[in-house]
Length: 223
Image 1: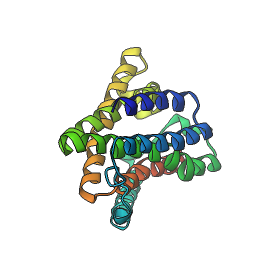
Image 2: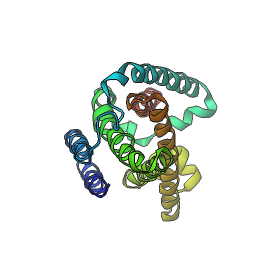
Image 3: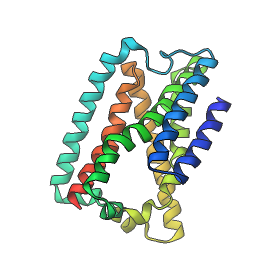
Image 4: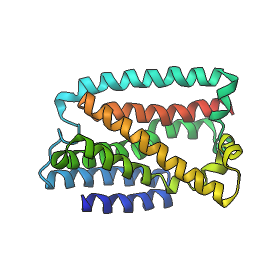
């Protein structure tokens, strides 16, 4: 556990400092290191939710969840009351190529692969072996929330919908970070439950990719 947390702290700082292609390289390396830590601790691919026999079931869960997110996003984009939630000032500087790069490379490899292997795979697997699923969910989700402190530092000013709520003061920025940590911790609980129910890491991977990647795509199309 200690080694895993140290690796994640270093990875969080590295990804925040060197995003983009270097972030993808970091994600692949960190994912391999963490799976090595799990194996060194006596764990198996099954502990990480990656046992070969679970792929088909996990893929079915993933496809269903991707479809569900797609329907929800489509409805949100079509309704005037929720369309503004997709607005983000980051989209203004993006072109179609950069958006597709994020959808097919940066999100699935640079974000989803590392975060799911780290939090719902290795961390969850290590704690569940020793303390059970409830404790594993709590530890994994709490650390997943804290993982999002650095990416949330400018959240209040980047998204107009949040700027109207939190304003542009330092206090507003701090409250936006706290809100992001709580929200992502709650999302972590959902991801852990998907991992438990499906028996596969592919289920939370599918939902995680859909929320992030389709969010980029819809936000770009609505800008």
